[in-house]
Amino acid sequence: MVVLIAAGAALIRLVPQNLAQQARLQELQTEVAFVERRVDQLQDRFNRHFDPQQTRAIMQEQSNRVDPNQRQVIWVAPAAPAAP
Image (cartoon, rainbow, N blue to C red):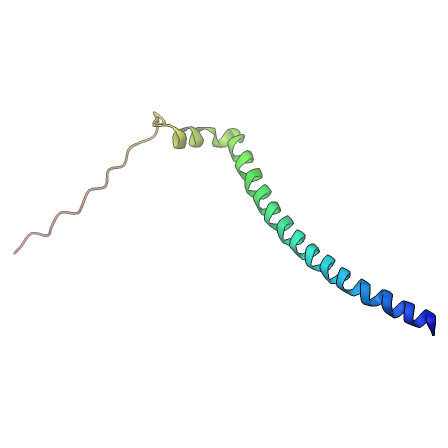
């Protein structure tokens, strides 16, 4: 009987601790998922900036220079139709 009472008292003390640990684990898993997404984004940016094929495009984005072989496109509004 004494053993059952001691076991019951131990379980009563352990249940709130277990619930608190489960809540903290959930918080940590959420934070890890957020950090993983951020790491993936930073890894993509890093790969893009050090990709030799992207060098010219990145230089154009970050400066006012334009590739000399690139042609400029000028959009012109269509002329109004002539009245009959």
